[in-house]
Each structure stands twice: as structure tokens, then as C-alpha cells.
Length: 573
Ligand code: PGA
Figure 1: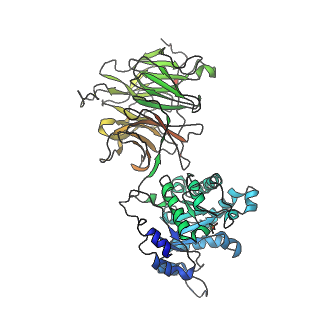
Figure 2 (figure 1 turned 45 degrees about the vertical axis):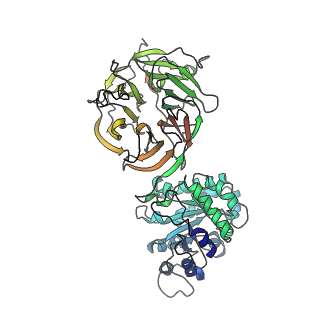
Figure 3 (figure 1 turned 60 degrees about the vertical axis):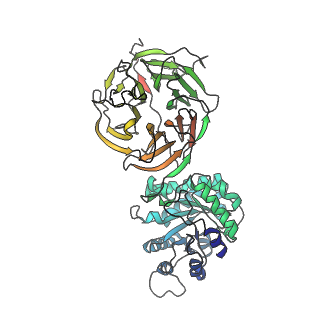
């Protein structure tokens, strides 16, 4: 204890001003040493917990220790359901559940241990064992009562405890996902995402980094390796590094820092203005543009990316689905391009069409046939129509910075345009739709505010019921650019100028995740990859211009990008 205290005292006490997320550290000595531990660790920030409690609060139960006694010592935690308690002392889930509830009532935090034996693992019973242990152990705990903030789950495969047989990071991840699925069944997906799940079983300084790099491994329960102060400190250090990409249970508190992820460059194009990333399920390919360079880019995540030169400034692109082309090969690579003067149709995937400059076929005029504006951000709605926002061409030069001259339009399958807003703005961005398609997000970038509208599904309707979703905080430079909605309805907004993408809960305006980029200007983002579980981020120069990518943790996924649908009877002219 003295050695651990010495290792920790100078750099482990967290304060609200700290910029690093430090792991919470708790030690669980046997009962007789609890008070000594509390005294020796005072001022270090390390908490103390008990390895068990009795089944009763009051009465004559000689030899038992009540939760209230543990609390009265100044302990913060109790560990329950450890496999040795289950196997050597016949503790059953119903008793463990009683103890969980007694501890929560005493405002103690609980680490609930679950895990399968070797035999159960070999018989592929992992899922059902932990499912049952969790459901019984957490029975009758109300998700709304605040108790959930005080529950941590430790997944400990019995075959790995004290045996030197550590689960591989992949095995641990699979089990942790199963734990989170059960938690999600019990308490709902949002609560499940916030509950920390530790891995336990032969964790050492050598295995901690790989384990903690798994998205669902939020911490470790360490036995043997905690008996040497230095090795325990090194394990905690492993937690410091990795916690920057994992949740801690304190995320339910309002002043808590959001989770941080970092995106890496995956395509090193120097786009002057990368934008409009769309992932095509049909083509298993990511498309995006570089606006002023008049390029449309394609990358299937395997081969070299390639581009097509359009001969016109490009505002945005969408996947095109033509009713009259039944042959899937004809459809493949088909895109609609919002060009400076017109909407165009192009094929990115037909024979011999790589790196060329042949332009596209004109589909129809773009809205506002004026030099003062051009098409900018756009996405396809859930009915297959393209919503397109315009851009004040003088905005960047600043000559009419205050002028609202750009409108918002919708192109339907008959290639008819309708106006969706009865007022104008300067720079359209953030256009995206949640799954239900009855809401549309939008921002006018210079205002730094993101709005939600009720979205009119019927022809001729207007956007209505504008409400503020989020304002860029005053301490961040830049403005909101492109955005995308994930499968849970959260909004991912690229903050151009601030080098990050933020995940905002549109119902509360709270930011709970931040993706950092090493460049200043991310311009838009979308989900892609075969499982829609990667976020792709376009950027622009001068320091940026590459395509960035980050794998989503916690089972976060995107929605399939809808295709723009053109009616068979519409003449291409
Ligand atoms: P171990 O113990 O790290 O020595 O395997 C873990 C535990 O007892 O839970």
C-alpha cells in the first residue's frame, strides 16, 4: 500500500481541470486491512473496496459484515460475485442480487463479476452463462434510479483467473460485447453504453495495452499482478493511455468530458476542398468530391482510389438509382452530381473510366440560375429525393458577407425542383436525415448554429418547426460543416477550423464524443465500410485534404445512405 501510494501521490489525483482522462483506481484488501488501506492511501485518489458483504443489514449474524459497516469505514466499493465466492462458497445469483441491492442502498459502488468456466466456454455457453448471471444479479434494479452509475461489470473467464491464461483481446472483446448486449436488454442501449465493463483474469503489464485497445474493454480487474506495486502501477498506466478512447461510468454526469477518438489519414489526396462523402452499399465504395478542383473521387477501401474530372465545380454528389436500368452492372457506380450549372449523371465504375476528364450527362438545371450562388451541401432524403442547399459565392471573399441569398431545394424523381424554405441564408451545410426521415438537420455555417426542422415528406410542403440543436461553443474556432446521423439518431458534425468531429445528442445538445484530426479543417463525414461501423471524414487544405477514417467503438453504426431515385419516364434531356 505504501509503495502504491508513493507511486500515485504526485500524479494521480484527478481534478476537474485535468486534461487527461485518468482511470479510477480501487484496491480491494481483505476486511481486516480496509481501515489501514484507507489511511495509507489518503490523498492519492485511490479508492478502497471490500471483497464481499453479508446478506443482512441488521440483526444477529455472527461472523458477517454488513454493507453499512463497510460504508461506515469510508469504503467506496464492494466487489460481488467473484468466481471464487461462487464456486468455493456456493454463492448463487439470487444472493448476489440481494447483496447488490444492499450495497446500492448504502451508496456503495458495486463491481459485479461474471464469467464462464472452461467447460462452459468449450461448450459455447459463454453467452448464456453471462446473460443469466447478469439478468439474475441485476434483477429489480431500476435504470432511472441513479444506481446504474454505481455499477461496474467485471467479465472474468474463470479459466483465466490466477492461471496465467489470459483471454486474447479478441476473446475479451467478444465477451464484452455480449455483456453489453445483455445490459442493453436490461437497461436499454444508452445506459448499456455507459456502464464500464472490466476484463479480469491474469492481466499483467504485458497484456494490458492490447486488452484496453478493444473498444468494449473499459478497465481491468487485476489479481496476482496487483500484489507488486510496480506492476500494478504499470497496469494503471496502460489504462491511462487507452482510456482516451473508452467510456467511463462518469459519462452520465453533466460536467463530464466527452470520449475522445482520433481519426487517421487513409487516403492521402491533397483535396483543396474535400466534401460530400457518401458510402454506397450497392458499390461497396466511398465517393466524395473536391469542389473547386472539379473532381469526384472513388475508393473501395482496397484498391487505389481514383477520380473523375468533371469540368465544373461540384457542390455535392449522391448515389443514383435509375428505374430504367435494371441491370445491376449498369447501375454500379452511378452518381448524381450537383454541378455549378446543372445536375449531372456520371458512371464511376464503367469500363475504362478511371482518371479521365469527360464530364457527365446533364440531367436538369440546378436551382437559382445565377452567378451569385452555387450548389453546396446535399443529401438524399429517406424517400429518395435529393435535398440541395446553395452557397453564396461571395461569402468567402466577404464582399457580401451579410447577404442571405442562398436557398434550399429538393429535386424529385421526375427531376422537378421545389423550394423547401421560404427564406434565404448564406452557406448551407449539415443536411442529413435520421432513420425515420421526418426530421432534417441544417445549418447556415456562419451562424455556427445547427437546427432541426420537421421535414415535409409530401410534395409541396415546407420545412417547419425550426429548433436549435446545438451552437458551436465560443472557445472553438471555425464552424459546423457537413454532418451525418448514426443509427442511434446522434448527429456527427464536422467542425471545420476546429480540427474535430463532434457527436451531439440532438435531443439534449450534449456532446458525448469527439473525433480529433491532426488537421484543422474536416469538412464532412459519413459512415461506411461493409458494416457501416467506420466514420470517414473529408478535409480541405491548406494543411488537410486527405480522407480520414476512424473505427467506431461501442457498436456505433451508421445508416445506409439512401439512393436518389430517377423515374423511368423522365427524359434525360
Ligand atoms: P488474476 O486474478 O489477475 O490473478 O488472474 C483475477 C481475479 O482474482 O479476479
